[in-house]
Amino acid sequence: MKEITFINTHLFPDEKYGGVVYSGDGLFRGLARKLNVFAVTTSSDPNKVEDYYNSQKNKVKCFKSIFSHKLGFSISIIFGLPRIISKSKFVVINGIYTFPVTYAALLCVLFKTPFSVALRGGYEPWRLKQKRWKKSVFNLLVTNPILKKSSFIHVISKMEALSVPKKYNEKIEIIPNGFDFSSYEKYKFLKRESIDVNKKDFNFLFLSRMDKEKGLDIVFNAFKDIQSIHKNSKLKLVGPDNNGYLKSLLKTIDTVDYKWIPGLYGDDKIKEILMADVLILPSYSENFGNVILESLLFGTPVITSTGTPWGEIVPKVKCGWICEPEKESFLKLCIEAINTDRKELKKMGLIGQEFIKSNYSWDNIALTFSEKIKINLEKK
Image 1 (cartoon, rainbow, N blue to C red):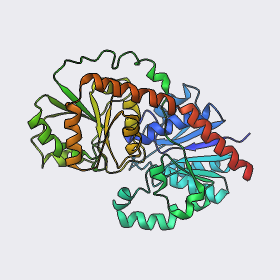
Image 2 (cartoon, helix red, strand yellow; image 1 turned 180 degrees about the vertical axis):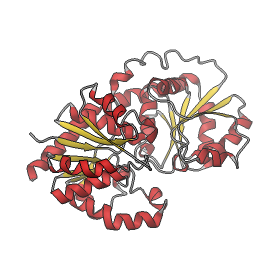
Image 3 (cartoon, helix red, strand yellow; image 1 turned 30 degrees about the vertical axis):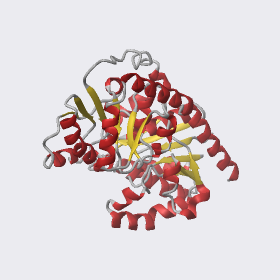
Image 4 (cartoon, helix red, strand yellow; image 1 turned 45 degrees about the horizontal axis):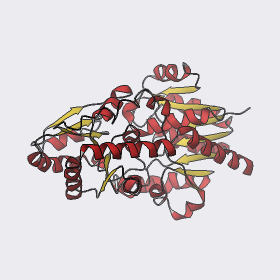
């Protein structure tokens, strides 16, 4: 029987490459519990990736990347992937623009293998403004023809669906990211029940890569004022500074008291969420925002922006605040959070926790996705 092939540029333990690693891992594992799925990825250390998954009885082939590891460029995948694609029953392509996913999509067209493609925020207006001309030409010549040939286009929110060219509307399937709740079980008794409602410090956590897109400049500009008003407010940044954005930002802003940890993963990352009073992510653009889901699951309220798909959800559920992606709006809500009674913060966290548990299981999301695959195979 032919397998379903899942293509992701990076998978664990290469967490440093961001949210698509987490979403790719979750979707792949979820689909593997429903269907016969084989994953293909790239890494500078292929053996480490293969050992990580194969030891857990998940089938993964990892090709060695060279030069630009972030883009997943690999000589070996050029020669190895055609055979895999030609023998696949269906191919799930989780992303655009990087080498493995683009190459896989072109091979699917060549071999007439049915496939889905996930945009992963690649068509969002804010992102398209970055390297505008290069992306315009690439989309015209490569991405748009790929979308046209795809069985369906996977987006993870209504907001992301709006960024897709209207001519492809009939192909859109909205299927959100999820969470593996098995890890939640280890921590469920640590949050909110143990809060010290009388403590003086107020801890803000920015948990993401250090990037303009994530609104890090908004955070620093606002915290110059926040810390002058509220001396006990603490800012912690956790995430890699892959492109040197934090370093360049600090050349212009030097009055903020903060602590930066280049990256925490697994248990260490979750413990930081548990210790925070509020998680902040005033992004200019997000196709989803995995860290918002994680923060709410572990009972920590959030301040995020209208540039994320959480703009309607958070105020409706009453598990945090939504700002415009600019300083004054973000500053106002941070001060409001500081002045909120700790017991009310605890309540907001618990409400968010229940909402995530009820709506974002990877098993349920993978079941929906697998049904879309089956429907499209029946059409073939």
